[in-house]
Image (tube, rainbow, N blue to C red; front, side, top):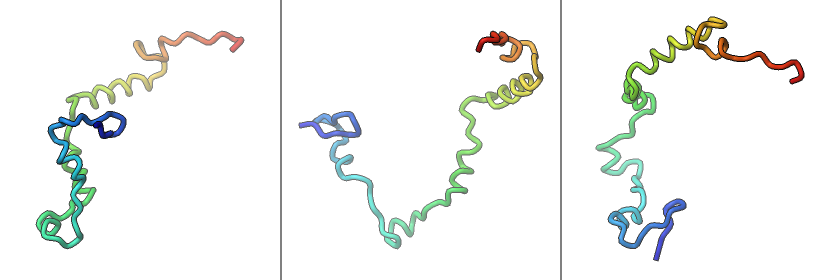
Length: 89
């Protein structure tokens, strides 16, 4: 027997089948778990991940490319390489 997970069927011998079928744990507002582990505010949580830069230097490269492309017709930019449109378009 196969149970669906999204659009893919879950095999009967799936290792974590029992854990998946239990579902997401539900905690009451004032239960022991919630008192020991209060929810983190979204702004504070966002600050944790803000310094993460998966591609080091990518933002700087985009900024410098943007500065170059702002000059109309700078060599190597799309504006400089673009061919004029024919008049019948």
